[in-house]
Image (cartoon, rainbow, N blue to C red; front, side, top):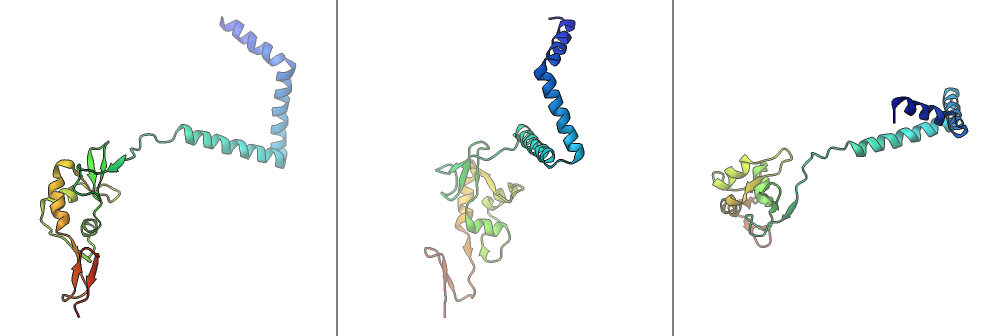
Length: 168
């Protein structure tokens, strides 16, 4: 098809009665907007909402990596941790170790353990701590040192109940 015949086809299409009627409808819509017709304004607002929704869906950010976390199994230090198979890393799930690394004063852990250093070195911007599966033994040893502090030195922590037993 040559360019001249393409232009002729468009011109022929626009000269048809139904095309002229469509153009007249658009012109009437624009006139209604200029007059401030509520129907035309609402129609325009609806069209804008649909256009924005379409743009949002079409251009949403597909580059954001969403972790695919699965139960740890033997890949991580404990069953509380989760394994991210995309990153090949374990996400810390131990409440006490997390509280200690976030500098809460109600928990104590051994500070200079290799597992603690591994976790401190791999904190993401969301506050999650990560470690490689090869470090799971070090992280497990670190977890085992974490205990909550009780209100008084005479109180003792009962690990199976996860409570402090009052001394006096």
